[in-house]
Length: 521
Image 1 (spheres, rainbow, N blue to C red):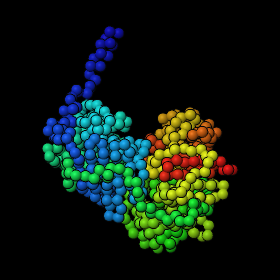
Image 2 (image 1 turned 30 degrees about the horizontal axis):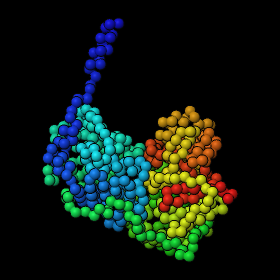
Image 3 (image 1 turned 60 degrees about the vertical axis):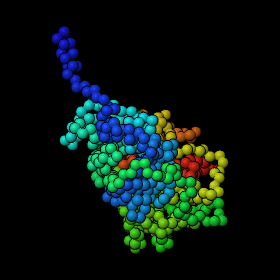
Image 4 (image 1 turned 90 degrees about the vertical axis):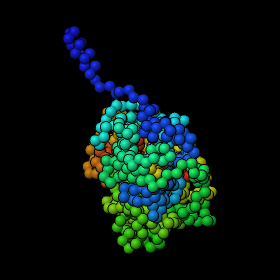
């Protein structure tokens, strides 16, 4: 017995323990030493400019940082530009069509996590909150490094690897929802005594999904416009609403769990489109564009329920839905064969109408009457007696707090989902729902959308609730493996039309709320 105790004690003594090092000194060396730290401490402004490559889409960028935490990043492509910014309180973005919205939820956390490093907040804690710990030595891509775990905002973990020989940051790893990311940081140059990396490239495990920045110039303490950090209050409208009307009513065709609207592209091509709040933009089906000659403005990967798909970007002069018209729109193009059905009047399936339509107007979906009532955003007052649920936008998709069998989570509201409720794989596994749901069965075949298809199962949940609404014995779908939204670790599930059709549903993007009404009233 004593011999066994001795062996046990000896084994404890041989377990590797992370060496104790002075992290503050390491961080100081990584930027160029004590003088570099003193220079950053008295920094008034930082301005960098250069080129950016987002999965093959080339552009130019400008980045501003003003201590303690104001940040602005603008990316200009040849035919459109995009912005993300933080004014010290609110984070906001301008999308591919120039529409401005707040960044919220885990997307805001991810953005502030990037600012945490850009602002050197690990050296100046008064800037962005966070913490860190030393993990030990590691070899990354053949380079001996010090491995440090950072916790920006004390939430997600980012591991950073400092070259043992130079002290410079060389690599970082983290997660973007369910995707692992690896960033390579190099081409360090001395700018006023500060060692600044002029090149970085972040990749994921998804093929051809990367972001690469190459700095061409850095300027410190130059004059700047303080207004750039604030969310714009005046936005030029890119739509036409009838001047003399409070609302317009548009009929739709409700088939197989999808809402179909008739739309006309450039005043020439009519087609039926699925109304899809789960789409972060409008997407055309490839087959309907052959004779329209829309100019190509780039391509980007798009995340769908089954994974990622390469989506071309085109610009149209107009998209007309009933009495509404959207002008000068950048939209995606993808082969959506198998997703939609031809509509009445012999018209083809045209694609999906998503955030670019839904975000412009308050609108009511009435499943019983098959009508979409679109309200004038300048004079809108919602009808009384509804159940109001606030939402945040996740990838431009409305996301609410709800409970499944008493377990809380964040659920997107997806008009493109023909089922009642899809419960994402991570939420199922982390809450052991396979032991808490009833009548679990395999689905014959596959389902999906942009990004591919997935297999899954069905089951019954005892209760699903949001606000003061409770739905008993709800049929749910449990997807299998996926790199798409159904594999999300941040979003618990996806609310679809077979649940929403129990109500009249008002989407009010300008006020970040959805209101559920009794269909009889």
